[in-house]
Image 1 (spheres, helix red, strand yellow):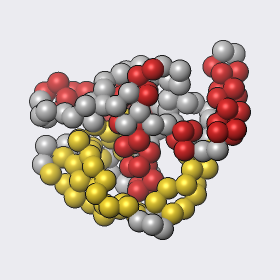
Image 2 (spheres, protein in one colour):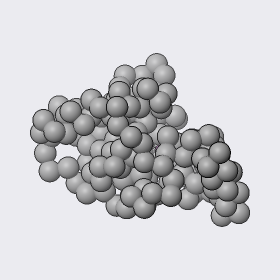
Image 3 (spheres, helix red, strand yellow):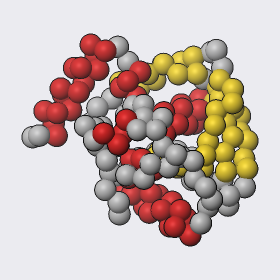
Length: 162
Ligand code: NI
């Protein structure tokens, strides 16, 4: 099990770097990330959230297969947007509605290091956009009204300091 980096840690604001290749170390990190995500009942987890500043994230949505995205790039986003409530393992117990594109086309390497290209929509498209934001140092609360963000951050600080 890996420790999850939480709000206030400067690493969450950093830009992650490309993964040079899918070696044994990265494969074992991916396994540990799945264990950590499942244990925390998450559906998506970026490497930066376990302190590794590399461009890699995993997803495991209900009724979907576990997925690995290495060096992901969104190459198309729909103008069509939707709003839905999000949360994040790095900001436990905080949720907010976030507006995002409904459809995206994403390219990445999969868990075998092979190139993948996917057209995704709905919830998976949302989770992918949320996780790619992590790789660029952006949190879902950065995408909401600043006043609301301040309120949520205070709420989080009250929870986390007991
Ligand atoms: Ni997150």
